[in-house]
Amino acid sequence: MDISELIEQARQAQKRAHAPYSRYPVGAAVLTESGKIFLGCNVESGAFSTTICAERAAIFAAIAAGESQFRALAIISNDGGMPCGSCRQVIHEQCGELPIYIVGANSQLHKEFSTSQLLPYPFDLKES
Image (tube, rainbow, N blue to C red; front, side):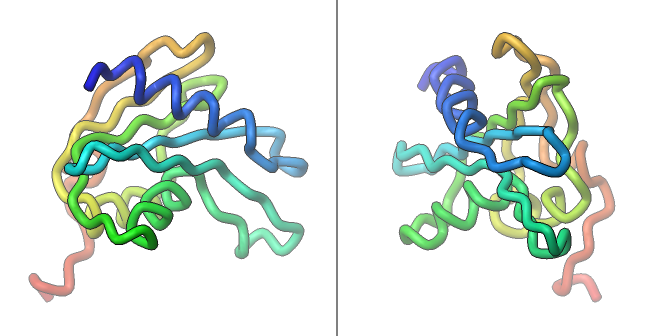
């Protein structure tokens, strides 16, 4: 799969974001080993702790559909912002080591990271 297709899917998801408070729409697209792409967007709530980020929405949608093996993740925002700590932990636990593409305005690739670069010292129950 061409990475540009994954980025375009994330861009389409970003258009569906519900961000009335932050005005910071984010879209994500996760590619599974089976070749399927699952989308997520941030959905904000007035009770801020109930808000969900695009990355987690995409990963959880894939898991809900029965997927458990992941190949790549693209995240798009207007400024190429990085995933929050909660998303980094979920990416580590659910996706394992994979390439993560951070994309900014005009769908231009901002940076590429691996899971371990974004979260070099994750919380891991297996190591506790």
